[in-house]
Structures are given as C-alpha cells and as structure tokens.
Amino acid sequence: MDFTVRKFEERDAERVAEIMYESFKTVFKERWESEKKGNGDSYKKCVHNETPTSVTTAFVAEQEGKVIGFLHIDANLHRKLGILHSIGVDPNVFARGVGKAMVAEAEKLWRKHRMRKIYTCTSHINQRALAFYKSLGFEEEGVLKSHFFDGIDEIQLGKFYKYEDQ
Ligand SMILES: CC(C)(COP(=O)(O)OP(=O)(O)OC[C@H]1O[C@@H](n2cnc3c(N)ncnc32)[C@H](O)[C@@H]1OP(=O)(O)O)[C@@H](O)C(=O)NCCC(=O)NCCS
Image (cartoon, rainbow, N blue to C red; front, side, top):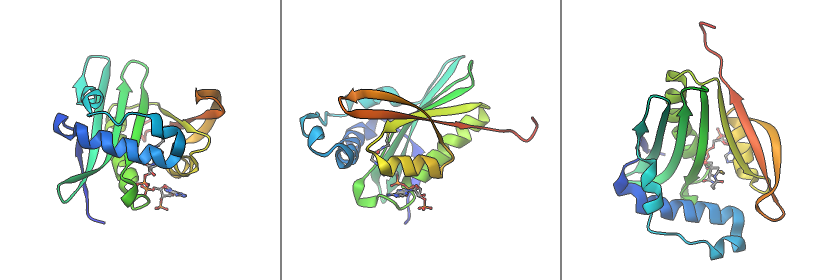
C-alpha cells in the first residue's frame, strides 16, 4: 500500500481526532460510545516542540492526501527515556504496515537522541496492539489494575536500545 509518513501539523488535528476515535472504538466498542470525538483541538499540543531536556513530536501517515494514521511521542533527553503516548490507524487500513512505518520514523528520532529505553502501555483487552508492540520488540514489564476503566488493566511495555559504539 502506498503512503508516506510526515510530521503532524495543526491542520491535521480534526482528522486525527476522527482516526483516534474510530480506531479505539474497535477496541472499547460500547464503552467508547460515551466518548467525545472532539474537534481535534486537544491534539494541537502534539506539534513538534523541543526544549533543552525534551522533544515532543507527532507523525501522520498520509495516503493520496488523506491522513490515515497518527503517532504521538516524546523523548526525555535527561533520562534518555522515550515515551510512545498514542498511536491510531484508520480501521479501514489496519494491518497494512501503517503503524509500523510511523513507529519506524519515531525510532529514527529516539535513536538520534540515543534513548536507552522506550515505554508505552496498552489495555489487556487490546490483543491487536499487544501483538503489534511485541512484533516491534517491546516486552511486558508490569500491570496497572483497572487503570482507565474498571475491569480493564493496562499492560506496561518497554523496549531497550543498544548502540554499536557501546
Ligand atoms: C495497533 C495499531 C496501531 C497497529 O497498526 P497497524 O497499521 O494496524 O499495524 P501494522 O500493519 O503496522 O502491523 C505491524 C505488525 O504488528 C503485528 N500485528 C498487527 N496487527 C496484528 C493483528 N491483528 N494480529 C497479530 N499481529 C498483528 C504484525 O506482526 C505486523 O507485522 P506484519 O504485518 O509484518 O506481520 C492499529 O491496529 C490501531 O490503530 N489500533 C487501534 C488503536 C490502538 O489500539 N492503539 C494502540 C494502543 S495504545
């Protein structure tokens, strides 16, 4: 499938809100009905920003001018810890390499800044995401019980980087 990955821009925010709503609905189903899709304003904070101690950025995947995926990350330059905050792909194009391609862009940035470790978490019912993260080299590290919803645990996942000159 032909698509490109580029930096997220404010103009993408409304479409990103739609993708995140629809992609997470496939996981949380009826629990998601009460969630608000929103106009995307909350995603505008994900525009690239650098300080002496951190880099926050986001990527989108785009196919023929239409945004089909979103990934928001940061890099703590002091602790050398990267965080994958959120990722979502348009359900119409699940399992076609879009998520993997966006994480590949994030990994270029994390490695450029020589992160030691990348952290993320996902719900225990989200078998697709667990398989996705494990395919990318993340390993389970812990469990947060009934974290965002009663009865749904969050599985903490981490991935350590090695560098050739170490
Ligand atoms: C999880 C998610 C981001 C994955 O993105 P995607 O574009 O569908 O995944 P990719 O096609 O890049 O898959 C990469 C690898 O993950 C694994 N994978 C992906 N979907 C899978 C599935 N349904 N079952 C098993 N493995 C799967 C495969 O190993 C795959 O590699 P392969 O195609 O070479 O076999 C996407 O499904 C999504 O948006 N889900 C809803 C939102 C969400 O759960 N976000 C993450 C939780 S915080």
